[in-house]
Image (cartoon, rainbow, N blue to C red; front, side, top):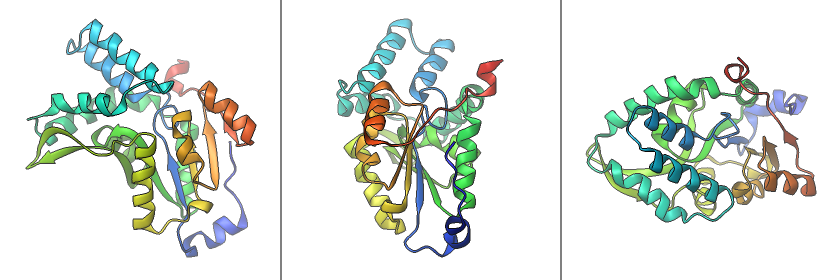
Length: 241
């Protein structure tokens, strides 16, 4: 684990200007699985997704991890089926899914890291390509106030089926992070970013404290080469039972 204890952090954290932030990716960083895969498996188990669609979705995830997925088309494909659905109903379904499938996947060590940063006075945020209604139950569980995410357009409480560009992936993540940093007066040179994925390299290169968590092979070797800290979390208790 990375120690966050130091006299300068504990004594002066609340007086720092501009603020220091700790940004956390979600999948394989705060939780031990990919949230998209978990959701597809959930739909399959409920009979709302066929085996062919499940296989296609998992294949898309693998292509994303190796940088071979058309992200713009893929995200639009995720948003389109929601057209005409009420936002409250989708949010409620996402909360039920979180309680049933995700809560047991939270890394205890990640939860402790979040608490350490919060206690140090840092602004804590989740930065993820997932949509907000998927992330918010986890953010509330971990007492994380801020979420930077892919956003689907809602008009009068109803999803339109459109994506608010850019989606929060790769350079899109950088776009929304830069906007967030400007709004909240954050010093990126003193801030932290935790992630498992090489696709987050543009963000890792912008913070003063990149921390690699449970990395994919490409990010692991990049971290070794750049001498970035690498940490591996123990599986959540539910996965050890």
